[in-house]
Length: 143
Image (cartoon, rainbow, N blue to C red; front, side, top):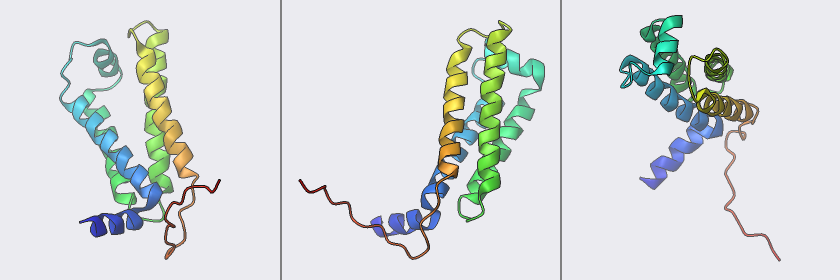
C-alpha cells in the first residue's frame, strides 16, 4: 500500500497534489451551492441576486474538474489559472458584499479565498523535479 501511495505521489508531483487539493475544495463548494443549508443566509442571498446558485455551482464544479484532470499532466497552467481566478473572484465578491453592506462578516470569505488563491499562485511557480529524480531521505543538519 505504501509503495502504491509513493508511486502515485511521484506520478502526480507537488503541483498535481496541490491541484487535487484545490479540486476537492472546488467540488465541496460546488455541492454547498447546489444544496445550501442556509438558503436564507446573507451570503447565499447575495450570490443568488447576481446569478442563480446552480450557475455558480457549475463554475466551481467545472474548475474542480479541470484541476482534477490536469493534476496528472505536466501542462497544468490553465488549471492553476482557473483555480486562482475563481478564488480571486470569490474574494472580490466577498469584499463587494461587505462594502455594500449586504453580508456581515464578509471578511472571513475574503481572507480564506484570497489565501487559497495565494497558495495556488505560489505553488504554480514551483518547478517539478525532473523525471527519474528520486527524493533524498531527510537527514538532520550536522551540529
